[in-house]
Length: 274
Length: 221
Image (cartoon, rainbow over all chains, first blue to last red; front, side, top):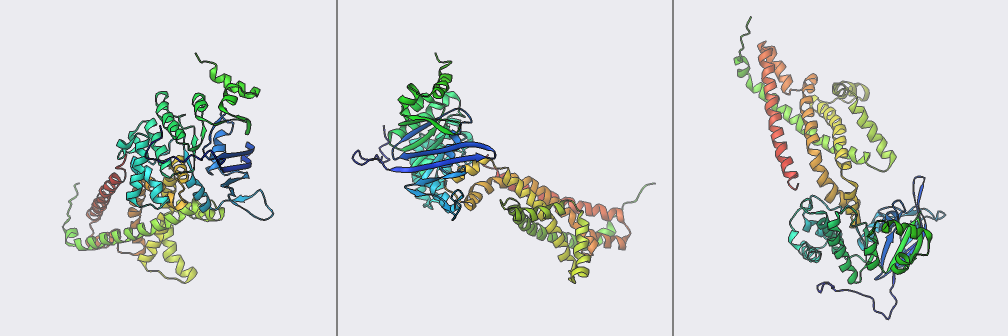
């Protein structure tokens, strides 16, 4: 059930959902390694995209390019139709990104990491308030109120004054989600949010993500939890060798894959099922 | 043969040694302060993505790490007047020699502390939309500071002991005053034993303060 405290904005059925983020011709090289080989992609408001693929397929790199944790080698990313970065005359491939622009993008595109990346020298509450106070320059009292609301939402309101080091992995990841949510991002990126958790802690994090899905939030999720991806996503992307190998609804990609490569990948997951 | 220890001539000249101790603390305090400033600048230069900023800082640091401090003292005091026609008084020459040298070492302390902060912390801060300055101030430096305390204190103790070299420039710090007392009393054993004790008291007090500071900084763990 959607949390009654947070108003949920779902685009009305009458108007088609607007494209928020658009990627064209995205390439990423790490030295001599060609990780992303020309990706075109767009996300509309309310879409939930699950990105799957083997290790080294480039799925995390792709996600990390969207909020510039990695700098694209070439290609453009546009937010609300405005291309980001500046191109110098005569060099269409060399896009420069001023820091102020990157900061604005990252405020609007939140991220949850595999390793949580909470700030260990701050309490849970201070972690959730940090972006509001330092980046959004919100008054402390107001930031505190909003941070507590998000912590309540992930079920950790009672841990506000605890340092992250005292929490379990699942709890830490829920704090990280609250920290990202407090910024009220338009898009949330999840980079394998449950991959470093003990199996019995995965559920509590996935339940929080599902709750966000029910609110109609726009989210991208890189995951190995195919079962969750099936129920969570409106669109599934199978990434292999740096390109989108197969894109479709969860049913199309996960249940009736057309590509041989997708089938082989999925078979590895069912190999030991019972 | 048994040596007859006699501290009374030294005790009567106690104010001379106290003067020396005060001058040692003074020169050390100024040099630590300036050294920290020099060190911060050098560390930021060395961490810069720009090669033309990194390189000079690296050369500076390597020069001071690989040459003996007494040479720096002599250079500032004896060479500058000859080469550039600038005469410095002993205090200024000693402070310059000490703070440039310790600046080079502090720079490595700061750089090491900053670089020891995990990549995830930088990314966590950037992902919230923080600028480089904000993430340094709010996330990296507060955590790095706790890791810098121990090497910083270590380096500062080295610096305090190196102030003894200022005696070669006839600056009246503790060792120089001790030599003066010695020339009046001819009791080197008692004089230098007293000096050692004074250094010991000074440094033990400093390390107690440093431990208190460190305990406060890492309270969150």
